[in-house]
Image 1 (cartoon, rainbow, N blue to C red):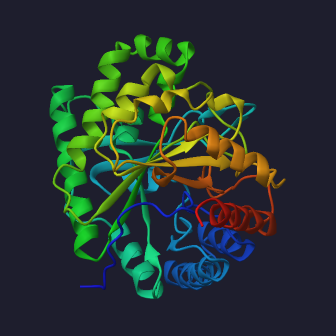
Image 2 (image 1 turned 120 degrees about the vertical axis):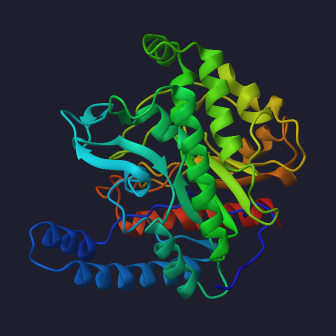
Length: 368
């Protein structure tokens, strides 16, 4: 078994996990898609670029490192397609963000969902093997991303509850497999909550036959049941995202409508939250945080553009958040990753690293 490091909470200066894909990696993936290089050749380039990325993360002072999701085209579909009974496929159209659409891809359930093996366990093992003394954080999408987003072929499941049960068991299996290989810091990424932040989103749920309270209960249950059997020394955090594709977003809205469920109803150890602009609302919903062991990671630094935020303004915003949550429970990060899909946000790699260094410097000043 690989070495493991115990992590008690997110770091004061943390990050969501994805990083801009280097040009060399993008070119290699295109060559692979065009049958110009083999899968082994692509993997070798991925390995080399991930090794460079880990070294860079450590060099600038991050205490947790990820593989940048460099082996993934999508932050969620690639992982979900690794379960038994789930397939990646081309859709009629892409997901609609503000002013832009993604590529037309999706996932569909063609058989009973299950976990026998999962190829991303090997991805974790490689990352663990090169991390040295840094803590490895592995990022996976929430079970809600399959539950709400996947197409279910007719006849596969006779009820929603049957699908839900299989999905939870599959997640429990892959989480245990990652733990067995040494994972002690797991981050679950979830955009489905953002649907409940606005009246428009709630209306879309009703079109699917779901009332808000029912959707919230299902979403919380999916998270809580999936991590219910996790070992005590596995830190599990969740990132709640409003969408992140080429520096655009899907939805806006405060956490207020669903704050009691998010801040008092989830069994995670920490929450990475978007607070980088007016779309996210104020800190008032944090009044529902009712656990002294729940870390709140304030995403006050945007990953959507390269301009650096005023450090003193960020410090003032952290102070504002302490009206609702003690400073020792707070942390700082970018509001999202830099490359939720392989296309990446609209900033340079140099600007990306300046953003991360900005987070670290501000955190060092605040939590001396």
